[in-house]
Length: 344
Image 1 (cartoon, rainbow, N blue to C red):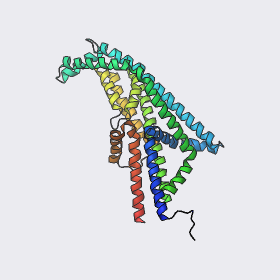
Image 2: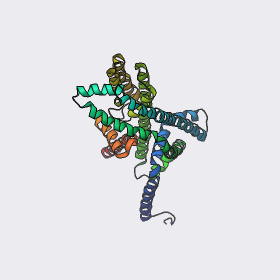
Image 3: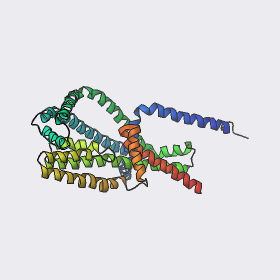
Image 4: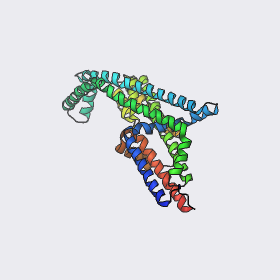
């Protein structure tokens, strides 16, 4: 005799439809705070080794997760505060100095006039346009402080959801996997494999993007200081941000810096900066440090790597530098899983 409390096949199909609708509704509601939830989950994946070491030393799960997340969020707050201070304070100061540097006899004007004459362009016309844009840029930067409050509120909300997501992932990852195995229409082993790929890929992408960018910013700031570039800390922070740009990245900052030093008469310093940037900022970081951070190749073809970076930025904005590679890697994992299932 059938159990009246056990759903039949028709009722199970209805429950499946409702479950999928519930998931879609949750994703729709969570969309405004999706960046915080996504980045927080990736932070949780990255903190997993530290969490495991604390658990091995006898820490309670809740205390170990809380300690890891607190340390990570403190590092994030300190880094964002330092970057904000550099960009607002030194950026405004630099913008206020630009009219003087572009005035007749100023360093930038002299270099620009020489370069424009070599390029057979009209220095007066180009510099006049640059001065006009500089004045408007300075006005915008000096009023930047007025909008900091709204940005701070948005950042705090993102940070709050990052903290919650990171803690939940650390504390309940095994439970998340078990529930996904029950709810997923895939075989449990396939669900486990895909979630494992998500955790591994997310951790690698976050480490490779953030930590390598910070290292490049620090190395470049040291190079700017050695070579005599003004405001090396500001331009080092700018280089760290530029490292997020696919392909050319840090070259957007250290190449013009080296050329500026050469054209202003500091030929040795400029040449040293260009060589330093090529060997250390790009060579050492991109080809030695970054591969170690991400744990080697994930089996993603080079063309798909560029597609994930450029396409991710185009579709999702800056956060696409993280979302794009994760989506592409997971898509390849799904295709590999399907191929193996078909072969068997």
